[in-house]
Image 1 (cartoon, rainbow, N blue to C red):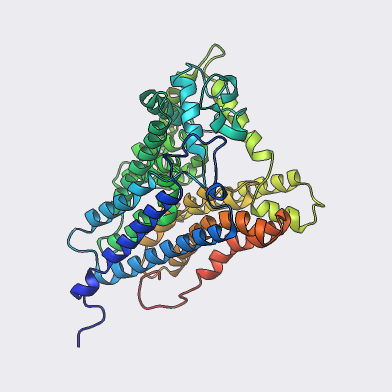
Image 2: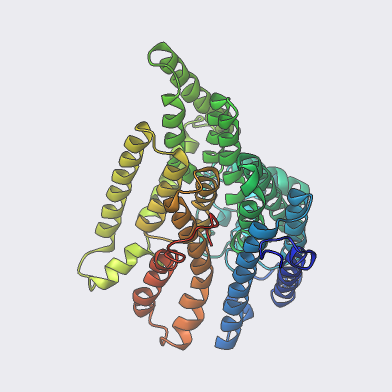
Length: 489
């Protein structure tokens, strides 16, 4: 009787069914949330725009759960039977097949892509500075209504991103659909290239199954392709820099990682950890001093070049100052669905939200200091980067579902590149996967369930929802507790 692990032809082709089912679900989402007929909707819509009733929200949640179930089934299949003779091509072609219908999905959970277009046009169409001039200044631009409540805010992104946005909108011109599709296409390309880098970083025996958790992951496909989020480009620069460092070029790797912070400043959380790791590998004395000077000097030079196109009459330094003030204003004003707000509600509003925000910032600074110390003592920078991003997520006043993707590549690399017996890395990766799922479901929990089952009570939605979104993944990740199989599931 053949072993259950034998790659029988019938079982070996089963992954096609998982892929086909995923493609059908994504095609259904393209029909349900059509981009082409709603691209000019102002203000932009969300999932309740297209699925206003409770049954619609429950159907959407069921589809997300099904997609994650298909991902895990495909992972187990790849772990046991492989993916044929050309697994990398299989994974990338499969990812592309799932991504194509998502290009035509309205960005229901993150409408930032419309603001990418509008802010890109500030430079390409209006020859102005997106760090000094908010969209509301350009009242004659037909796309300004798409910015919604952010019309009076300047750009929160790095100068490299605004250069890219200006270039893409120079190509799309007054064609809004073309602009949105260009940004989505860029995110898709960055997502797939990152997948190739992850493949090359992984040991041979883990490549197919672990890469599948990246390129066929529904949370990533929805974030990067359906929503076209620029986090894909930020993560690409980080992973590319790490890839270069692993190939003996840490100086170039650090410079490339600095580009990630010039796309989204939140990438600065990871840079010191890799800097410390690579610095430790230099011989003490002049070698370390020289490498430090070159690494920091090169990163500063790249920042200067990236900000140079936005230098105005006040000089090049005004733009980074305006960006810093913009980020500070967003970090300290307002609050949304987040652990910080949970404490505010749980304490009966007896402690001001500003105080809770400051405590969170102090906790984050303390965490980063501890991670740097652990990194200097030899702890993996991959693990530290995941911790740094997750620390930001749980201490910030605001949470957005795309934040959940930031730690994931480092959790994946840490589990896939490390010792197969490292149960802690496996546990962390499982928690990261569950967190991606609960984050995706949070829009239904805080939207449909809050409105129809909780009477619209935001406080009650916070008290129930935050533990489910941020705490439940750590409990679910406890399964399986023990396994002789090195698979994480």
